[in-house]
Length: 276
Image (cartoon, rainbow, N blue to C red; front, side, top):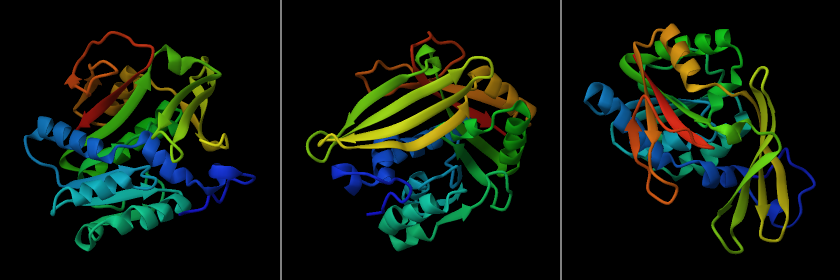
């Protein structure tokens, strides 16, 4: 199990925990993401996508799920963090069958570099593209993403919003697996600046013995809105963008619909798909 190299002074279960494993259990569902990629591409082009580029890929669990989902599928993961990519090699890539593992490549580089083959699907998820805080930066990134897509290609982005997202000093808490091996995930909205929409957010983990990994992950983002992102995709050359919204209640399985109008919730998540 990987050490938390940058987190010192941990005690109890927190000292034994793996922050990347906790992250994957808390916020990632690679099987669902691959299903969504399939659906949105088939909605756009009526055929099965075979190639994926995952920008800001982190531990590239989605790339690994993609490659293992079909014998002809290939994936490229791009991220700047050598530590995170290495964790993915040790804990995700290593679990694939050899044939599938050969169809996954990772690159330690800026997502704005263009040195991968053209792909059917380019994903930038977990709100990672919000690291770009100006319209100029974002359009520049979207132009690069556009050029990294095949002639028929889609860019998949996830978004969140609602009034809870614009609160400061607000923490969402969830339990991930109960019992001694379980832990709590805390998503903290530290600060939101309404003048420029810049925000500071942290992820903490709390364990059954009361020990914690504080600030396991820290983010400084701009909170973009759906219309802003769609306008910037159009400015970058995408001919169309589509919003997929989960209309299900909290206690129901997700039901993703294409829509141009929804009721506002205190907190919501959706996908924006740019179609080339």
